[in-house]
Length: 118
Image 1: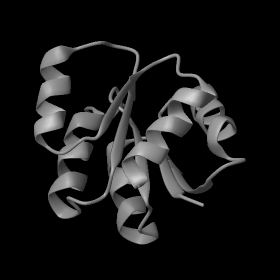
Image 2: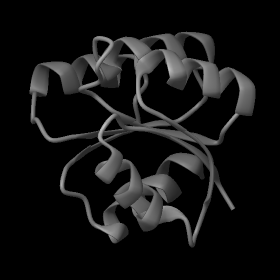
Image 3: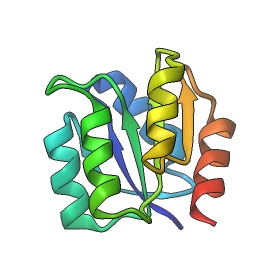
Image 4: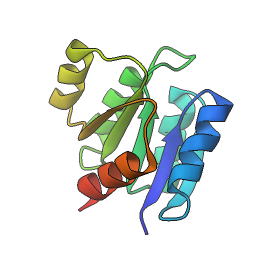
């Protein structure tokens, strides 16, 4: 079972993501902003981070850069409602493994988790 940190500022989206993965994987923390995400990664040592890009303290790009700098082997899956090829390219250069556009299905997110944690 993969241990995941979910980073999402919208409570309903947090619950949806948790519901999509909780039967197959363990959620070891939920964060509502980038600073909380960084703290959880340091404290919980997850197997994967599921990161929203648009967060209240800036955005998930900054938190993702930091996470990938400190723990380059930690897989990060981006979930976003915006399609931005420039940001996607930048995040790929920082080592982001998956970039999913909301709304995401259970199959999509589980497949992404499996792909990045193998």
